[in-house]
Amino acid sequence: KQEVTQIPAALSVPEGENLVLNCSFTDSAIYNLQWFRQDPGKGLTSLLLIQSSQREQTSGRLNASLDKSSGRSTLYIAASQPGDSATYLCAVQGEETSGSRLTFGEGTQLTVNP
Amino acid sequence: DTGVSQDPRHKITKRGQNVTFRCDPISEHNRLYWYRQTLGQGPEFLTYFQNEAQLEKSRLLSDRFSAERPKGSFSTLEIQRTEQGDSAMYLCASIRARTGAGYTFGSGTRLTVV
Image 1: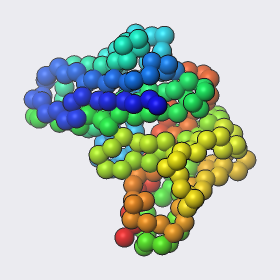
Image 2 (image 1 turned 90 degrees about the vertical axis):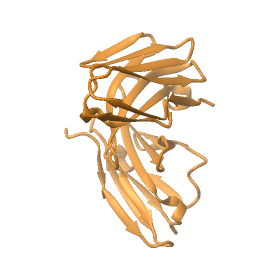
Image 3 (image 1 turned 45 degrees about the vertical axis):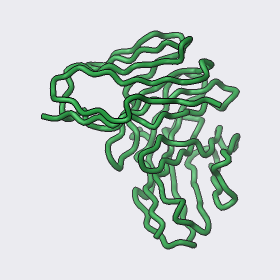
């Protein structure tokens, strides 16, 4: 059974700081990995998708890396802003044999202070 | 296409009542998933459809829960005889299978059972 762990559970930083969110998963047989953002009481917004054959993806100030063999991914946020405050969720997508379902971590709650 | 739509956004119901939620996926997506998220946790898989066929149900989906996707378009999730433990955010997502593309989530339906 796939298990996903995110560290830290919560993080508070001053505006402008660079930060790293960590995600680990127990079963390396994944199809891809997706990072999401969730604002309080809202749905999930996709940030980055990394295919299992890829090592990293970048979008603006966000960079996500994937080390499939060691079961790890990181989300790097450069020059953080108060608008980045949200919960960040890591999710691994299983292969077709598991219906390609997503398994989520519990999230990292990020607060960026002005 | 405006993405994945869920209705209603919020539902407050008395214990023992039945509720039904609707999800309209992205039109060209052939797979539709339902997830449940309780406060402070990551979303958990409930069930998924490929076209109109329900291919898998989680053990979280008790006999009081039923989901349908008639004609492979929109889907409904019904909860009968609601209990306070059913209070959660119910999220719907869709993908086009085997394309390598990521999930798109709706805004969710927040259910409160009083």
